[in-house]
Image 1: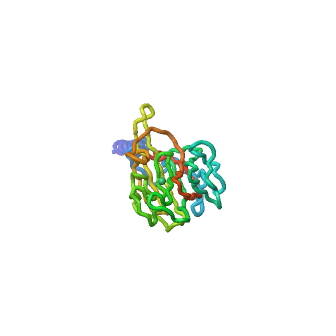
Image 2: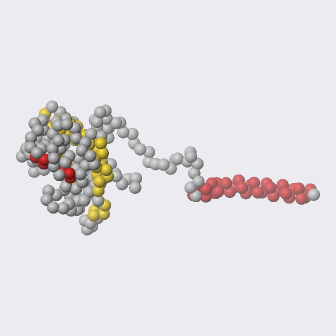
Image 3: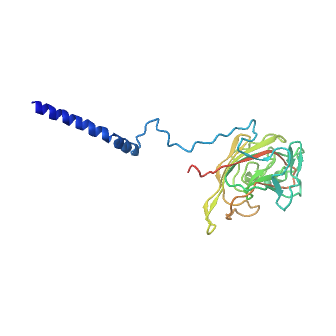
Length: 263
Ligand code: MG
């Protein structure tokens, strides 16, 4: 009896000793199977950096300010040389026949904030009334137009990706109030060796806080005549269009992002 008691006790102790020794392994196996505890959060990384938001549409702390109301030092003429559009009272306006202007810096994926205003004097019709444009990477036009109360073709009005995608709604304020665009842009990707399109570009646009383009797939470069086409390119500027109408711009800032970072 005694021997039997001891042997049973020893067996029990051996069982617990084995169980204790096996615990880390078992825990690892459990982790592998995805049975995490709520507090197992240390593998969620990287920790997002802190960014101080701007007040009332002003630039956040990590933005590149492209126009702060003072000068066009971040811009140049697409024809070479200085941007000659006129800066006045914290904004600048298209100089008719002054040519398009573009940022000196090139960008890939980005978040862009830009404010614009149609000319005070309401003049012309359709595409001739307050026409300008914001070319993303210098190639894809987000239309700027006084289309508050003026008819034109749907994919040519303000908030459209010109001749590709009309805005979801007409979010215009009455002329000549300031309009706001907040743009989220994912650049197209091309094969470095043969220039073939790997991924098209995408654009989301809020006009005055209202979504007008929702992850719209670009069809290619903006063409005045004919269909869009893809031409391989790298980073590109923000280009503003001189369409002969003195449209004003102010408070322009951009944040570089990596749209594919979390995919
Ligand atoms: Mg235009």
